[in-house]
Image 1 (cartoon, rainbow, N blue to C red):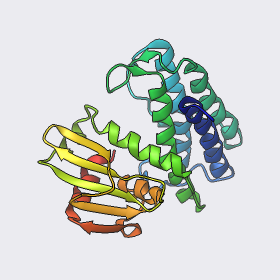
Image 2: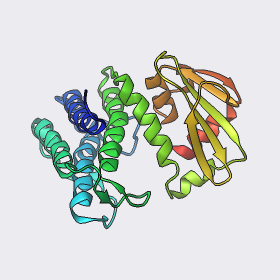
Image 3: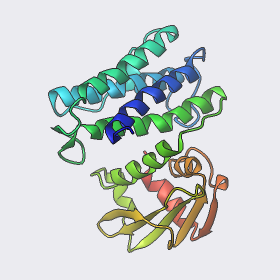
Image 4: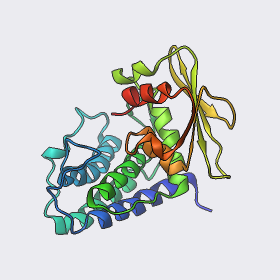
Length: 244
């Protein structure tokens, strides 16, 4: 059985390969509908740049600034698969001691934080790429669930936009239809968002396949893809304050 760290690194490499396969032969100038400020070449640049940037943090400490993918040269499209794989492997190699304490935007944390962060970001952008080129995208169930859990954890980060998610105890339950998954109960507390595993409760209950839950919560697909029961305004508020 793989350890959690082996699963993270293996998933990063396999999902990078799947992303590369999706964009192979596509028009670099194609607009990305779900990231309207980007062309496909910018999305590819981000997916190759992000793990290299994270690897640099593991080696050298805190970064000076967030990188701009539009300033990254990903090379000609025919070189994208090799360039993307090299970036993912650079991060895997830099995180060989996953418990090493490093800088993160949530405070000091283990090196695996960055493998997980880059993987979950990649999971969402795989859909962006597939949607752009008109191909289907199916995330593994365990990765879709991990992306939700990791995303809810990030909402505790000191990003000003997330402050709008604070509330007075309103709750949203994410209810996956897969029988082997437990749902997430999200609470908008006065000091920020908290969550816990739960299969009951919720002022709003959002029910659907776990992949659809991820994509609705990140604004990639409309809420009509899932079932809503309860206060629908809570989802509107979420989308206005939780997506970057």
